[in-house]
Image (cartoon, rainbow, N blue to C red; front, side, top):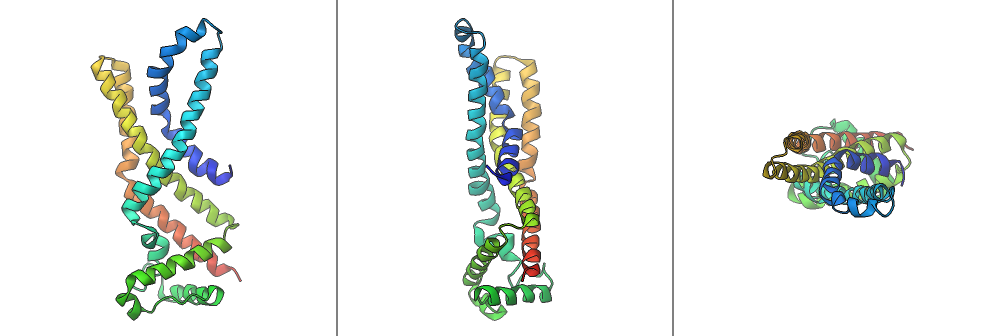
Amino acid sequence: MNTYYFKARLFPTVLTSIPAIILYNRFVSSLYHEKLENIFLVLPTITDIILSSAIVFLLVQGNRFLSKEIFQKLYFKDEINMPTTNLLLKSNYELETSIKQKIEDKIKNKFGINLLSETNESVDALRARKLIVTAVSQIRNILRDNSLLLQHNIEYGFFRNLIGGSFLAFVISVIILIHSYCYCNLTTRNLGWILAVAYFLPILFSKLIIDRYGKYYAKILYEQFLTID
């Protein structure tokens, strides 16, 4: 449980666990409270705390899976389509040509990896991407203790996992909303609408968010790579 775990995994999970906790307390906890409170007054509260914590831990894993396996793959398909890969392609002009050449020369000198020329890249784009992915993994390895890169990695991970968590939270909010209409509960209905709208927004803007923070991370990665000896 390091800084990345708390800030990029746990924090977005806490923010998106509200509907799950409400669902648990509204439909599960109430079923056994009356029985437990006759045994020992504090037992229901302890049980709620333990089970609520377990729900949050479970959501940490679920959110990470959804964010990586659905949203990240949906927008980037695989690592060969990540911003870290795209920026070094000869066909990509987001980085200035001389800066890109410096990065390529440093990759060759440090790791012995020769990225494809523009001509060869146009012939075999998949191989060009795979070579860049290999180089990026080496760059990450030597920059693992870089605090600035870690901060941007945390930011990217936070928003990616927030989007994955928002998907689950939105589904649960809809369940709460449907239940409120079935039982004519106005308070729960209003809460359900607020939660559903709040968690739908990150999903709506998910491509913009993931793409933007992915590019921030990629640019910092290469900037920091150029600063090391």
